[in-house]
Image (cartoon, rainbow, N blue to C red; front, side, top):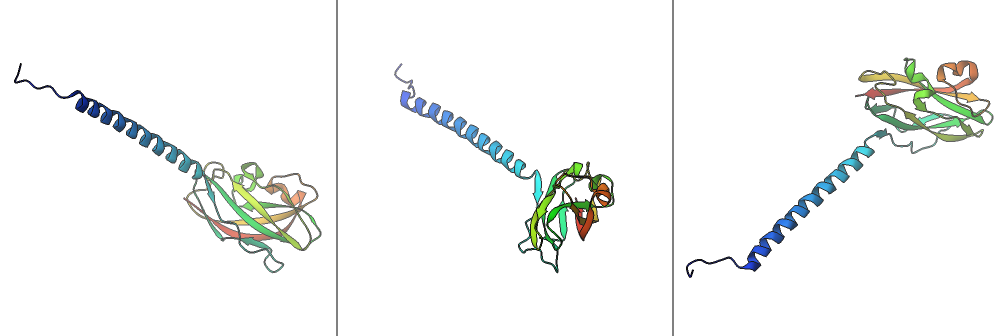
Length: 179
């Protein structure tokens, strides 16, 4: 058997190690990509509009960062508004009216009353849940009115009932662009 040569044991061991390292590297790469994708999809669940960078004043009692808010129909939309109170201190609740019954209720949004001192402003965080199905807004631009109602206590109410349960103090038109 002089003519037959066998590979050395060391070179065979080296190729097995290379295959194991390659399999582990591909596995770790897959796990890293799956983790990154899940984190980015969590971030994409809500569309956040930046907060207004200047306070509300008596001349401009409702301040938004932008007057046109882009939202996706299948996602939540979050925006903030600064509201200035010239009247005696009290609770105030925003109400967004886009002309459809579903969007005017607080059941589909987190719009809680906030105590606003007289001669001062407060920031309201408004969350609109699932624009397309709950709010029944088609794709396109919708002119809405952001209204602030004064209240006697901190209980919430549906916006259509606001006329009977509170007094509207200020309003401002905004545009929701649904895609």
